[in-house]
Structure formats: C-alpha cells, structure tokens
Image (cartoon, rainbow, N blue to C red; front, side, top):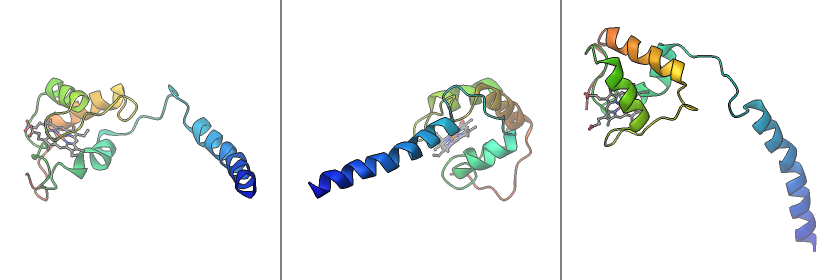
Length: 109
Ligand code: HEC
C-alpha cells in the first residue's frame, strides 16, 4: 500500500516536470537558426577532424552531396533529422563547408 502511495506521489511530481520540459520545446516550434560554425562544432566536429571521420573542411565538397549524406547517413555516419539540424541550418552548413578552409589541427580517419 505504501508503495502505491509513493508511486502516485512520484507520478504527481514527475508530471509537471515533464510538462514543463515538453512545453519548453514544442514540436514544430521555430528554433533560432544556429550559425554553420556552431553546428559544425557541436555536431560534425565530434567525429570529423577527430580521427573518427574523414576531414571534410577545405575539400570544396559539393553542398548537394553534404546535404544528402547528413540526411541519409553513410556507413558509420548516422543520419540527422530536421529536428536535429533544421533545413535552413543544413543548407547554410553545406555552403559554408564547401568554402571552408582546412583546419591544420584537424586529423582524418
Ligand atoms: C558519429 C560521427 C559522425 C558525425 C557526428 C558526423 N559524421 Fe560525417 N562521416 C562520419 C564517418 C565515419 C564518415 C565516413 C563514412 C564512410 O566510410 O563512408 C563520414 C562521412 C561524411 C562525408 C563524406 C566525406 C567524404 O570524404 O566523402 C560528409 C560530407 C560528411 N560526413 C558530413 C558530415 C557533416 C556535415 C556532419 C555534421 C552535420 C557530419 N558529417 C557528422 C562520421 C560522422
């Protein structure tokens, strides 16, 4: 019986917290667009340039190919959904990547 009371109390406490979490990022809500550098540093740079993926900066990679690979993944690289990288962010990222200079600190796979 006591366990049931604890469970109900726990659910009552967790409820508002989950609601707050859900309302802080509503599905389909427009998030501010991050700069290409910010997306690269936060997402791509985790693998690329860190011996996990090939170096992709300073190679004039065609933006269409970058967009395709980011949305579909390729072998060990996972795909990223529009909720993770928005369409606008991906377009800007792919164009920036094509023009980006190589970073001598980066190392490829
Ligand atoms: C979890 C690690 C990981 C993350 C994060 C990641 N990639 Fe990759 N990526 C890889 C790997 C590994 C490959 C090589 C895939 C293969 O062997 O075909 C790759 C391949 C690529 C290629 C093809 C490169 C070539 O030489 O043909 C592009 C372009 C690319 N990634 C872009 C991106 C972009 C842009 C991001 C950020 C949005 C990103 N990747 C995030 C691991 C990652």
